[in-house]
Image (tube, rainbow, N blue to C red; front, side):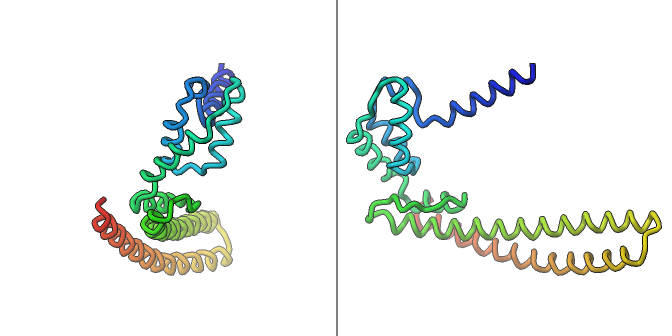
Length: 193
């Protein structure tokens, strides 16, 4: 029974990767589909090619002009400073999709979001290092309890020193993250979010 469930889950996952449903291809509301794609920040050539491939399975050719009109309208929703911030916070790449009149605000938000994302990654990396060293300490203590040698004592001393150093670093990284969080809050207030 389990293999059947796994196969169904895999098929469901593959189906969810499709850019467009069979029904959407047949309905052919290309401007609405483009609007949705633009509002999601989909890259035009890549996304439209996906639609073409998907719709070719049901012998439908998407209307590029209608889709592009919708996509351009959708970008008006996507290309906001707050959307840029959110994309950056998720660590997403800026594909420079925004029209010139909207790009500056989106780019500013994106750059700030990326800085916050990178700082969160730094904090997490230090936490991971501390956790790994604590695991090493537990192993060394277990070895000492089992009658280990002086090498284990030296290892324990070294990892404890390194943990102290990393805890200081963690404090600095968390302080930097708090500063960025305040900067993000000020940015949201300034742009109306």
